[in-house]
Length: 147
Image 1 (cartoon, helix red, strand yellow):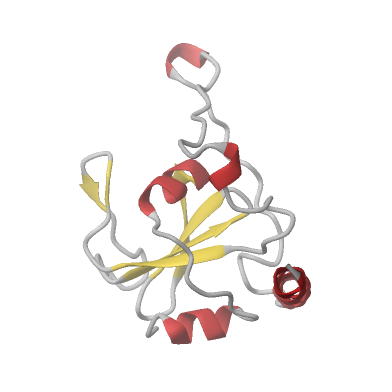
Image 2 (cartoon, helix red, strand yellow; image 1 turned 30 degrees about the vertical axis):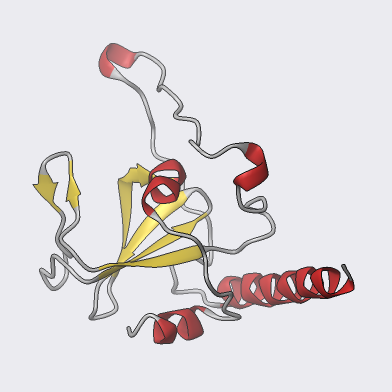
């Protein structure tokens, strides 16, 4: 019981340090929350919200407690029948997907970061596996994933 409380406190400390680090990087897309994209369905109908498929007791802690999550995505990323490629270098596979503030960002092997408005946190949760590690910084996480 006490080990779990200590682990939770260590996690919160790491999350606070990560949030401070992300805010301190002015050029990073993670330093400020981008304006939300206008989401509307056909003919101006309100957007349909997709609920996470996980029951509440299996979900991760709230987004306020975690600065972001990341996962490798080695195969080509197909969105709406289109293979997504990096706008800067043209890479189309070997992505790191970053889920930050209910948005999904793509990072190619060359280090280019691109916001993907067609993906959201619910999509990320459906495609990601279980989290196996906590990293104090973005660089540590990327190093762990081999990027």
